[in-house]
Length: 571
Picture 1 (cartoon, rainbow, N blue to C red):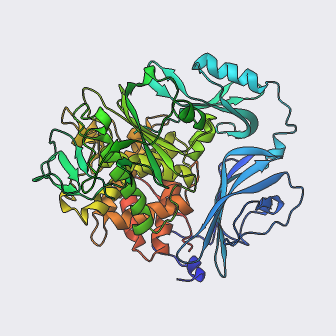
Picture 2 (cartoon, rainbow, N blue to C red; picture 1 turned 90 degrees about the vertical axis):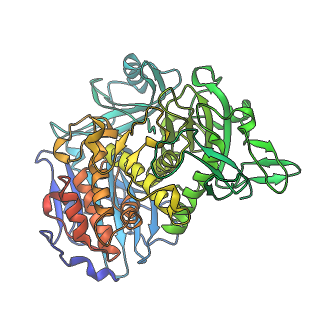
């Protein structure tokens, strides 16, 4: 495929370029999907800063010096067609513009721009001086949700949606304990009036070694809940062996990709440190990679150092060791991504957290927003009276996918972008099941589209990909979206689209997830809407030569239309 294919149309109402402003007042949100040379004139006044960009990328050249608006390099990747997809964040007079990101797609003979930026900010903001200090904004946030540690505070430019006026604001993020449990509040507070402009909870919940895994009960009709890693136990379904390091009678789960650490069934309130866990606390409290006495030829981990079985989970350590390794392998081998979560490795995988009915991910961007100096990490709780430990195949694939999203599109964890964020992680669960099914057909029957049923002690699924409203909360059509709804419930829109596409004749889970992953890497931006994100998926299908009309049809059935049906398809 060559880059010249950009202007062809395929069943959509196609325009030569697409740029639309969501307001006619001074500052405007401009959403772009346009060829270079057809972009709006205001972009000619933007500077481009390529600091830290690797030499392997094609890059747009800076033609403006001392610009008020600059595009600063975030990251880039070269795809299979040798197109460089390069992300830039917008800054105004050195202040980041919230939610504004532009992606250049540079091929041999053509350049495309997609994303959204704020134009004419200078008409609304005449000075960077503010009436409120960062400390003032912190006190406003803490008066609403008290925090027990210093927050991360950034001055930003924020476009008020109702008045379409650009204002200076403070973005404040921190971890907090509330009556509802752990929370990762994000406030955007007007830097002159103190009014809260936006709020959301950014908490993203959800090989020689051998041993047992799974749970003591069986909810799935096609396989028992109990299985093994290796072949030591007669009569048990078997997955592959575990990636452990053996030295003089000791096996340790510590490799360049991840380290597994046991919290030894301590309840979260009793921990002498807070989550996420910093480098300093990991060292201070000697949170070392899990190790156990072992010997040839079996290298068995039988009881997680005496902390398993727990809450019907046979070995959370064995489970996450295998499933996280397999998830890494899936992205690298099946989807061709050598660094699906970046180079901040190894990640830390914490298990055996008691009184924690959840699992959570904290990517590099999450750690930065937390103000915690530490590695990206995953934490798996022991569950509750209703759920066994969250170390199962589905949760492992789901939480790892949050790290993927955090590294690439960094979808904001609220409203429609948050629903897409959660949905991509749900898709990641089924991508992992499908990947392992090729070698171990018993692990998934290819027809079970429930989420969470295999670890439910009350035999109840938490979500349904094929029919989201079955859980009593989720939506399966964009028409039912309500601003501010729980992102786990709004995820149903893209979940249903993924199910429909995966089961379309000629499609598979692998094929559908491939274009979702491509869109996450190359087209989605932090503030993606359902419609905008669908454009990226359709584009990804076209780039790979897949029947993109099938993608359009799947989204149409859940009430999602690529930019109201008017968008150019460009390679």
